[in-house]
Length: 547
Image (cartoon, rainbow, N blue to C red):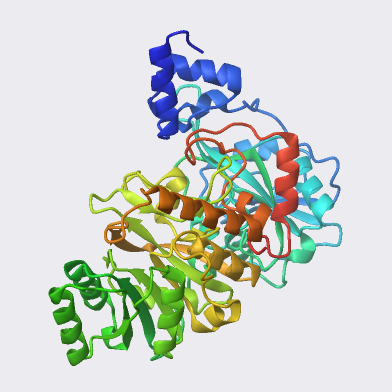
């Protein structure tokens, strides 16, 4: 790439830090040519161009009906998409005033769907979108190979206000995630659905809103096959979101906090819990006292016990995060449990209600929070598996919370492979079902193992980024610095690998376009056909987020 040793060292350092965007354009161009790796800012140079006008290739699917969502469309958008669909059986869903030829059927959004017997599949398309001419062959082939009832692909955005059009903001989708797709801007602009998947009767508006949230198995094709018009209005889908208020129950929440002294820190932690909770009287706070010696700590604990603020459980053993938490669960019968580090301060008001709205919904087993350093830099926005040959890593770490990440994923509720134990909520019933934390993982990876066991039980792990807290990471215990501590972490990593093996390399949220070397999301490339095929097979499993 360069024969300047100093320049090569700088490039290596930037890549190691996840700062590929800071490389000079000339260097990025060389990498693009030699390695096929791009940064998001240079996405337009990667984007394969579709020749417009073109027509949809649909010969292999005789029973295809194309339904165009024209509710928010300008007339020229409809004209373009109808030109692309020339020769297909297509309809427009909108209002009677839409200026299109009388030969095209127009259905009101509230009209009930009535399909004749010749229709086998429906391609739902937003007016204003541009599609690859090959989208039908890719989606239908994936459905045929896997038996899926619906199919979607990745998309980007196109902007015709820029000279020559600008293709930007790719949305590299996860394997089907009902939480991710509860955000309208994340929904694919085009979805292919089998007629058998539609629970008639339903209205056209209902079908468009639920196109990616139907109770069916979807296959995901990780290819850019559609483009959404930049700035186009999206239909409301909140009524189909899995994040729904649940009937109020006057149940308690046990909060378990471990500490060794650090009285000022743990006092701030508890104060934040009580200050921000909607119903602080429901919190059953249990402090696991791991060999504290300070008089200030003793006085604080006595004050809490006298006021009924918290129970204090003395734990006179070497530090074992898993064992101490397991012991702590015996001191309450509250149906929900929050495991909380003593260096965490909750910021979100009504966090207890938000948490319960997640955890009381079907198949939601574990909740994690968005954790920030005191300077508002992200410390945790979920956990990613399969980066290089290393252990699981935190999403978003080191990035500004104002940034939000690709498609603002770090500030949106979504599914994750795992979340950190620094703020981890679950139900007591699930905790008992999977056997609590593995006490042989005393310090590291115990949270990862617990999340994997809950996923193996068919439960979702949700990164609930609408709950925000400050995390002064390892402020009391410190980080792994000594040789003994490094050896301990290595041994615990080996144990985790021996238990879970290949599961630690698979992440349903991490689209195969993204690089798996360096830092997460720091560059993308075109996945190989073999990788695409494996992803397609994984995406259509009965429970693709389970193990």
